[in-house]
Image (cartoon, rainbow, N blue to C red; front, side):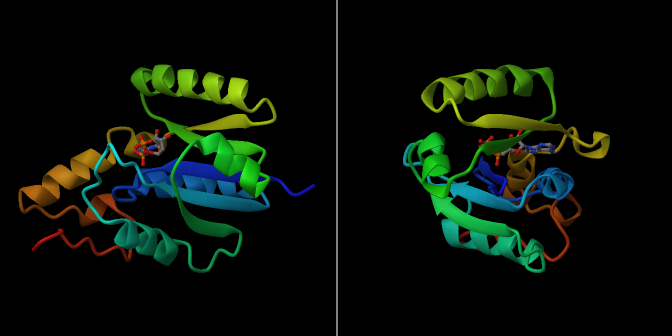
Length: 157
Ligand code: ADP
């Protein structure tokens, strides 16, 4: 049976932290869906299209990576795709508490799913998408925090 994983997130935008988790997880799976969430209540800074394009560009040469959009319950997406694994990253103990409850609830909703956690690489432990957005909002250069080839353009500028 193919090992299929879903990495859900807002990727607003993708950072080197996400890229590192994805690359390190790749050997474990036959297919990895990077699922970019559309959340009606949480308005994203970047539009869905550029968020997806940047991720596609980073993984263009890796056939087993697929970039999709989704809304609704993550476990419903996993059922639809036939995925047995969810991929998430952990940076801090706060991440752990947050991720633990989501993973345990997802397991209740869909007992066939296992969440696999990757510890952040130490150099990316302080990195998150909101820091990147803040730098851009204030006119700074965030290119060192995002994967090579990702040229962030600030919405409305
Ligand atoms: P969400 O909005 O659900 O937090 P994100 O796009 O921010 O989605 O993150 C998706 C996943 O990537 C989460 O599991 C998060 O912990 C992980 N992640 C984000 N940044 C890093 C990083 N620097 N190192 C490791 N994991 C990370």
